Figure 1 (cartoon, rainbow, N blue to C red):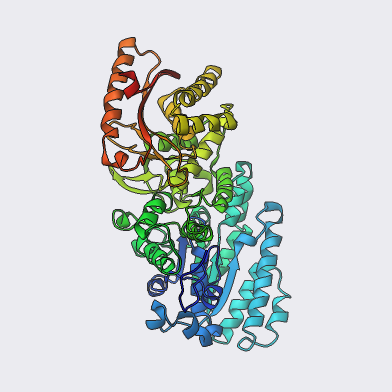
Figure 2: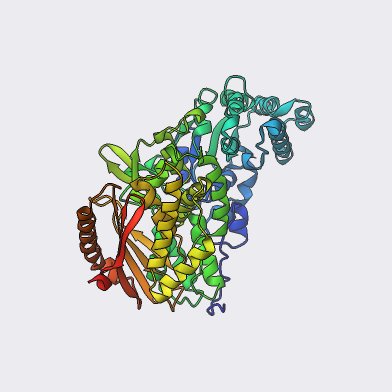
Length: 589
């Protein structure tokens, strides 16, 4: 792609970048988050911060580390001069010795965890001694390596620093990596508790950090993706404050829409975009936006997943300013596979699957947003909902009768949720042929043949339910239908799932910007009746479905988004697990 004729070198896109110095020195675009340094300093000194994976936590931590590093004072102007904090520096900049630990690279297997943690800390403690050798007592490194394990070594380091009047800022990234790995196997819960309770090794390590705060460890900044470990370690490190739900830090990681627009505007000045900024925002917003990390922020500011935005912009420019065929970045799929192992608690659709099914079919779930909960209580409804929230699988959607309303934030997450649900169905012997369903999707998009698609779904539901006694209810029928429908690559599903009637229509918005020759779009009304419903009740449901699908179809939201395609107003009616009606309103008249 040819760049416009400009004098300055175009800033590189920092996709996947976690090193703040590399971003600043190698001419990468940086979304300025340094204004939050003041807020962090004015908060409690022992700072916990939880956000979903790939939201920019590590880059933010890197930005903080270098700001406070006493050895980086000569680079202050170069790294921060043109940023907010460079123009409004705090007195504490470049005043600390930095200890940085990244638990994500520690082998989390229980059998080798202690040795792996010791090895990781030893590497970084030795690096600490080398980095600050001109300031530290002589022979500190040799004496350090005589100590046995990370607990003794940390105790020695902070004691020696205190003796010579030096202050430490401790950063720990992915502090809960151990937990997330172990909890994917419920059988190992007792072993996990042995490490995080009583005299457990991880517990003792955090006890040592706590003791160090009465010495030379002046500030602590810890990040992760869930509060489970924090709750289990509470009495081991009960001086920390969890700012994950604080309104003032809602925007510290991730991108606001203003920040996304500024980035697109910058690159639009350097490349020949084939879309306006508004058009690109309209395309990106349903897939990457709508995260809310504080109840008070609901209705005010939503956050974009920064990793997804950067991936999209990189692909868009790399492909000649044409839209990428896939909106879901592949690395997110890898993260999802890890997450799926953690949240899959059983194979009989107990608490977690029933919550997932309700989210899919009803569009929301209500409960209490928990700041923390122990590992053994992870399957309780409110705790599981909160876990999904911290992982970014649901977000705050307001309040409902005094409870927090949790909703699926966007289409990328919805695809992951649907994939999880389909995998769980498959594990419970509800199988379907992916190649067969893809052929039917193609015929639906290009030939207007929708009945074979919905009949295939109905056959899967009927066959599965006739073999098993479980999962014959409304949530199952709607959940499986919507999950398969929403996997169709030709459409982006738009739902009005939380209206007063409960279950509502799904508008399959055609992805004409990618599949320019597709010809058909659909709006679907899905009705469910109990298996003992009478023929009269079936006819009444059909009549009601016809009226509703026509009403929903005649809206700006639909008419402005069908492009050149022919819109089909389809109703699908189930009686128990048997599909008893499926037709296009216009064809049935």
